[in-house]
Amino acid sequence: MKDFNSLVASANQRLKTAKCRCRIEIQNKAVYLRGTFTPGKQQRIPLKVKASVEGIKLAEAKAKQISGLMDAHQFILDDWIRNKTSPSTVGEFVDRFETEYFKNKPNDKTTRETWNKEYLKPFQELPLTQPLTLPLLESALYEQTQPDTRSRRRYALAYGKLADLAGLNGEMIRKQVGNYGVKSLSPRSLPSDQLISQVFNSLDTGWLKSCFGFMAAYGLRNHEVYHADLLDYPICFVARGKTNERYVWPLYPEWAQWVVDSSRQEINPQLTNSQLGNKITKAFHKIKIPFSPYNLRHAWAVRAIMFGLDISLAASQMGHSVSVHSRIYHHWINKTTHQRAMDILLARSDRPKPPV
Image (cartoon, rainbow, N blue to C red; front, side):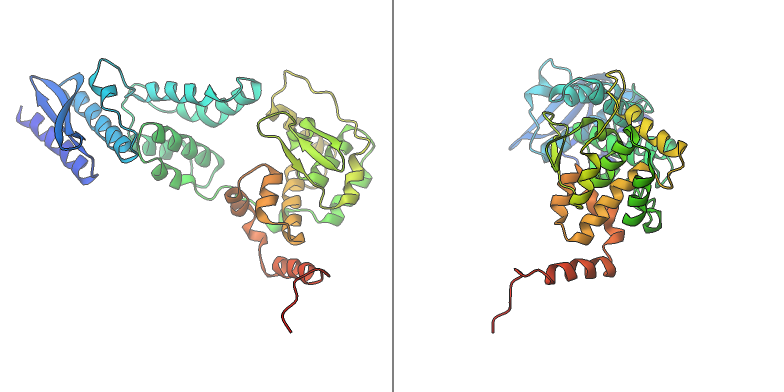
């Protein structure tokens, strides 16, 4: 019993250090959490678990969860003291996360593909029967992924969101995303506009030439070529009628002519976005185009910087956030790019003039 009391004391000390708002108590061989859950009144919350090593681990996780909810002003005492069951294990939180994820999204093949790749795969690496805690998530992150890799970034973002749902500090997990996507892009890897034009003119007329033209002129992701239309030509509309629809303008209006008579292949409804994109990537590789399809998208982004397009507008047209845009393309915001943008800006006849 003495050893067990030491276990409880150690857990409470950790909660105190973490500035949690409740403590663990044992009464009649049952585990409770005690704290000021309503102003000026100490109360106990029964956890309905026996006093055991596993019970203390669960109580510590619950204490952190409640404290996080209180800090976020989202704690509802009735949800805990009535005969309601709240998620506590990893598996229970994953189930709740999945329910919330699909609540406001269409449960179609694209959404399901994103769920499987970005969330389900990382979640499957977790011990689903154990209480959800930050140390558990951090341990899984380090064991399953390598630093500065695509998987580290994906797992860190997924685990961070799961921690948020549990009332834990998800930002602590998201800080571990590393530098994937920043170091992997090099100015030397991008084709020049001259090379892009040469490759386009060398291609035989057909679906691949049309796909190449869309990506070069509008900076589309490879699979988005199949979800784009030119009803507002020369403006390209991506995913018309979908929640992520957007307009994109050609930075070289002349390149919009490349896709006027587009002959894209019909979409097989059974194919996912990844499969559609891979189809184009394999075609690039087969005929030895000296750069990847995605580098056409990156080239559009750099071109936008050099032309002086506002970063928020460029990010919007590319279909991602300003923070993502800045993180990926900051290499190109250098003296040469700034000078090019300033030259264009200052050469405008309508630029503001100083007072005389």
